[in-house]
Image (cartoon, rainbow, N blue to C red; front, side):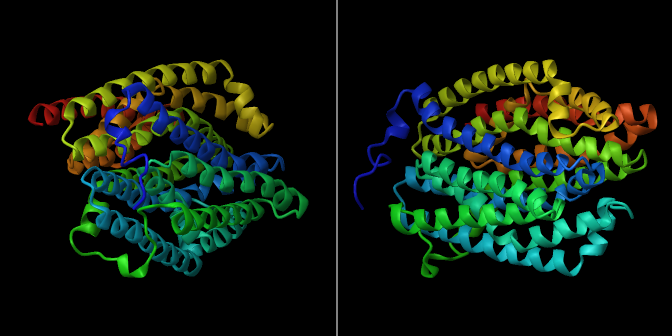
Length: 445
């Protein structure tokens, strides 16, 4: 193996602020690219002026979130396992991890495609689609199902590539898919008059192109990653290590899907306008959340490498510096969104009823914006020191055990006004609990 930056041990010796910047900035850009990517479908469908099509895309959002649940499990788990193996100079395990992530992502993607195509009707009924939105949602689901293997693998691959220190390449892969989606969205949605279905086609093609780029990277550029079938194994603790470490992130995403379904079912009782509005707000608020998530995810290889190399002092320096960055960018982004809340909603749609709901909902969702990054950093720290269970529990609480009952309780107490504050209340509880749990783990370490 030729000398690489990893062999020069820059992860263990570079000044913390520079190392964090080197890893986090491309990760943040990739996260923001993901936000733009997710916003694109809603934005261009919104330009049709049809609130029902916007509502249909919102109703199918849990499908994409479920894709990301598995992509994050394989990607985050694979990234953590690969970075620790690199810190231990175990190249064989790095090859096995990267091969597992690839083949597991493709297998799960094919299973998702089959399930969605065979059970489209019952699934959309469960999601809250009615007679007005069903056909739009059905066409979107069919096309996005075809792209499931590429959507899952391209997202997972970006994490694994970053574990090798190739944050720039991970960013490029994400940008390829996003730019393709943004270019193709207006062509299929408006140019070919396909509406919501056109958005799904653009999404599938964009992820196919991103997958092609990562395929090229693995085969031609990577020094240690592998796609060879002979390196694909579930033994030697590979599958357990990847899935258990990535499980908190996966459960976080999966329960987000469930809570989104529950939220949509509650909102449908108030009409399709609130459903369309929450879809726009969910995408817009991703900017604040993913900005901080990008920071937290970007430093994961640094945390895993430091832990694998036995350098807990450096581990804690990276943690503290990243948390400061998260709070600063969280406050700045939240203030910006509060000042521009109505123009942000109108950017997606001009329907006055949807805008009215959207402005109120966006303010409610922004309340936890300044500090949500602390939760993500704490969870990544837990996963990086092989304490996945507490992070899993926090994920379960934030998006399921606590949020879902709280949504019903708040609706009973305050109706729609109460429901929209459920996520922010849950976020603050999760942030406080994560701080308490992580401080106890640190003392033991």
